[in-house]
Amino acid sequence: MGRLKDYLKENWGAPFIVGFQALLLACAGLSVQGNSGLASELAAYAYYLLVIGVILQLTSFMKARVRVRLKWRLSLTQCKPSHV
Image (cartoon, rainbow, N blue to C red; front, side, top):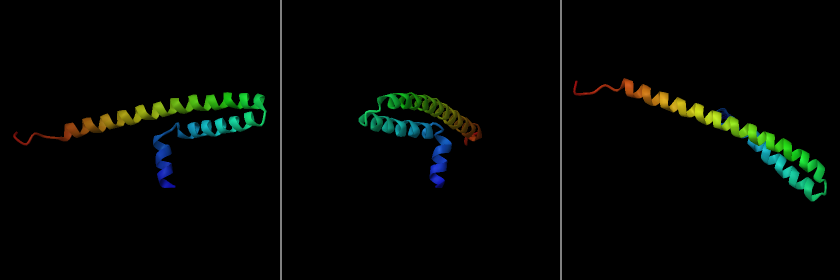
């Protein structure tokens, strides 16, 4: 369970993207059963989840990228030339 928490902490959009996939499968099932009206409405909500998920995932990616750059710069400032 700890690995899942760590994954979700780093990938903010993951729950929304999984929700999108679940709703999309539900839409397919509803379409097969002939309930295309409800499937269409559910597809709109699935789309919203996808958009939110992608935005959050992009945000978490950018935050992680900044964190890596800061670590890299900090490591450069701590390195001292050995010949001085």
